[in-house]
Amino acid sequence: RFSPPEDKSAAKAALGLGAGDVVAGIVGRLVALKRHRLLFDALSLLAAEMPALRLLVVGDGGAERDELIAAMKQHPHAERIRWMGHQNELEHCYRAMDLLAAPSEIEGLSNAVLEAMSCAVPVLAHSACGNAEVIDPAVNGYLSDLRGAEDMASALRAALADPADLSKRGLAARRRVLERYSMEAMEDAYRRLYRGEC
Image 1 (cartoon, helix red, strand yellow):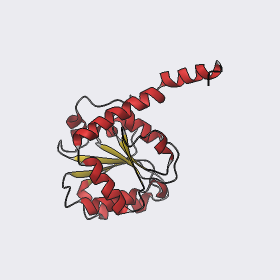
Image 2: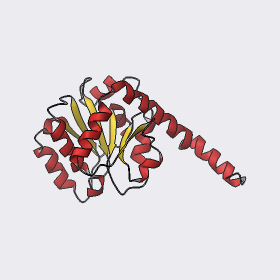
Image 3: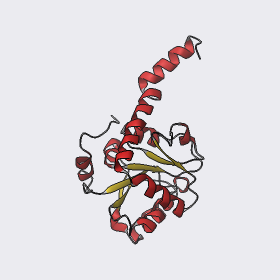
Image 4: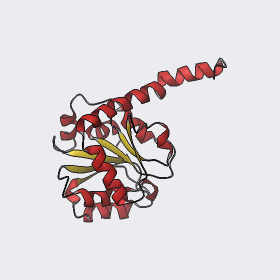
């Protein structure tokens, strides 16, 4: 289910995005710990220098729902933010992304991170959270101390500056997930555990 797109441009077009759009996504409930506002503020800082940058916001529900929807609608670059709401088929959203942002400081390993990586989408995550256990910043993604909007903008700028490197990291991210978190890998780990090999 969670696999790379055959055609990234077609995946973007299916969500109303342009082939030349550079898409950073965030997936999850609309709650403060996900830190959506950090991404919105980073867009404000990067808008002039990165005219192709688009945000894909996927998720609904949560204590900050109304406030975050209002923030998206009132954003000075609202036309560059696409809110998808709740989605049952998340793979279509991941396939349209060039990068997944996971700026939460206090989460454990996120399902969204594993799903995005499985779709060959590299992840930019906070270096202090549980997602750091699966992301190797030298190989398959990006880790940064995302304290504020300027940190997020700087990390996005660096990650999105080199499309070839982004693609390479995405493929490495998929390999990492298949090696460690696929059904086959989990079954093998349980077999070794039962045999007393771990």
